[in-house]
Length: 179
Ligand code: FES
Image (cartoon, rainbow, N blue to C red):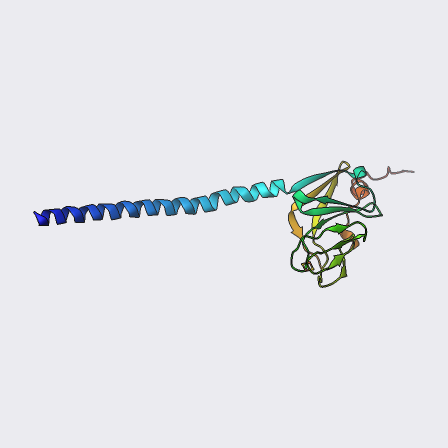
């Protein structure tokens, strides 16, 4: 009698162990696939959603800095009319850098690094300029690709996007005068 009860208990425990092993295996597959698939989709969505339409060129005054918190950048319009999109993250240790209108510079609240309107370093400890995002101007509308940070070591004029640059390259060649 006792032997029978013992056999029943053993087979119950064996069935329980098999069931638990199956559940654990199923969960492992589910976690693994959930980890891989949605990440792929999320990456694609991030790339699409990285583009931020800032607005028409004429809405940004020359010598102005406009914050776009949702894109984590400042859209700067320089005195020559060109645009730069500066990442708001300090290149020293990553604090968010506010624009100080009165001092006309970016001043980091963490260790006081400062940057000019083009993001170039004015005061250490930061050793590099603020990073950039790509600016595109299409049909007079300023767009910023906030999905990809562009690191730089120094400021060079080629980093500035001018509203007229695209029109110049897209302009048809002058008519030929034959004879
Ligand atoms: S994090 Fe900006 S100066 Fe240190």
